[in-house]
Length: 276
Image 1 (cartoon, rainbow, N blue to C red):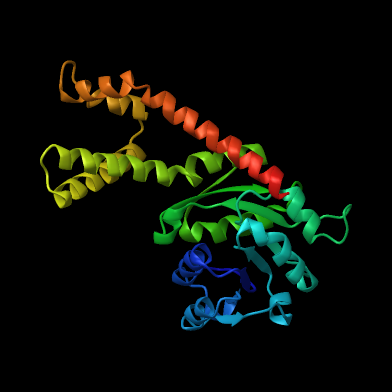
Image 2: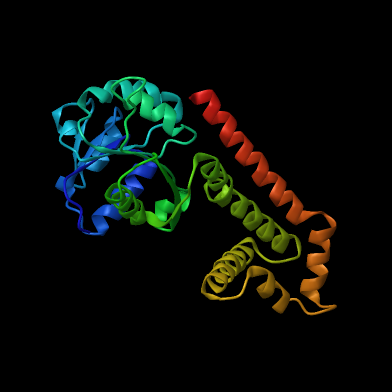
């Protein structure tokens, strides 16, 4: 991975660790990473990978060309205030959920009317922990193409990326891919429980459910046809699949998914208003 300069993770927890692992696996040198975290155990885990760490911001942070804020949104303003004195010309990427570019830019900027302009918001999801994530990204207006490319390159270390045009669209990303793994886990558990209720062992049901979801997703990803067409092809009139789908439809399953996503998107916007 050809990245010039060094990258600071401000907050070194699970998502930062996943990103760091992906970057190191891609060829980035440990010396190009710097991690700032107040937790001793987290710092030690990074130190064992050969990465420089610190408990408090100092000149090593100032020397980094990219900052990735990976802290809880509730403490973000405090963390920004503590690190802002060392901000020089870095590209700043925030993966803290629910914090608007306007808030982040204002906190990082020289003054209220001079917000930080080299700024990107990202919404990764938990499969990033195994290198299979997908991240929605939105850029501060006017961000240079080189900075967009760099942000995209960094986030691809843990999976695919999708750029969106504005922050309302990122709220939808939150509802779809950010919260989406929980929807999949809910369906996965329902499949397992259903298999057990019908006579399979828990392990048999688990293996079959995992294989079914993984295989169906791979088939959809590699097909030129829509999921709707693929569903029709596996559904014979009067067959077993048709019988199951009729039950889903009678319970308004597709509508429930849409309503659930709308609720998540609305909540994402509400939280951003509260935090900003």
